Length: 109
Image: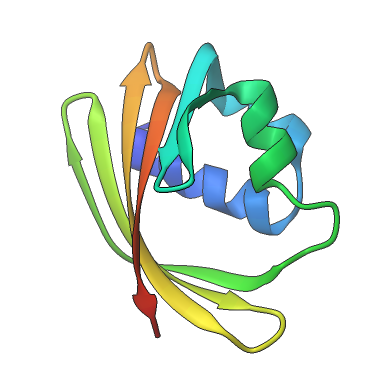
């Protein structure tokens, strides 16, 4: 499976609220960074970034670029409450699993 497909699967698992399946895509040393989070570990990522109740109706990938062990994804997220925004995310891979994600916040859509 290509790294781009693996990145797509993480979004699918997020929308379906399937942490169990998402966990299998991540390395044990996975880190997550965003303007609000600085290299948090996998446990903190699931605690902070995977809400108990669904927040998003859809995450539509608008562009995806794969180069070696990195994938860049641009997407539009639609919230259940009607809001929407665009972000970019940089995925890094080790042995076909996601080792880190860096989020770059975009603007409201």
